[in-house]
Image (cartoon, rainbow, N blue to C red):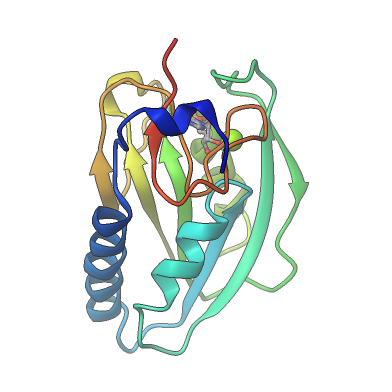
Amino acid sequence: MTFAIEKTLPYITQDEINEVCRRLGKQIESDYRDKNLLIICILKGSFIFTADLIRHINLPLSVEFVQLSSYGSSKTSSGQIKIVKDITSDVKGRDVLVVEDILDTGSTLNRFREHLMGHGPKSVRICALLDKPSKRVAQIQADYVGRVIDDLFVVGYGLDFSETYRNLPEIRYLPD
Ligand code: IMP
Ligand code: MG
């Protein structure tokens, strides 16, 4: 690839990401035995993480995709969300695990969780690949966290800056 950003050192390497997916997948597998697991992948940022994570969960499960967009600039979220694509299957009675790329202010997931609760799931938990607790505004935390990170803007492995860099195989931070 020819991204200038590739001259910087990876912030989270492919090996570390693989290890995170394995660890979280096994933990989820043991917590969701005898449950009715429905994974909800939040597009676009968590498509790669979800694909890797679910292959470490050796249980019957189904996967749904939701696309949310927050009205804000490219590096901050405004707290207002729009559901661009909603789930198509019934969540009533399901044990829902929402898979998100990064929990930043928490506004996006907080609003989506309210929307989901209105559809009567049996339980809702959150799995976030990355967590930036220093930026949190909303009352929300992830039940499963891949890695806590500093207040940096990161890209790659599904995460974008203005729709670029999603295809980087590792996570890098974008210098100011
Ligand atoms: P929140 O509503 O502030 O928690 O924002 C969550 C969403 O903002 C994530 O799902 C990402 O799409 C995006 N986001 C937040 N921080 C970053 C980052 O460091 N890199 C790329 N996207 C980010
Ligand atoms: Mg994004």
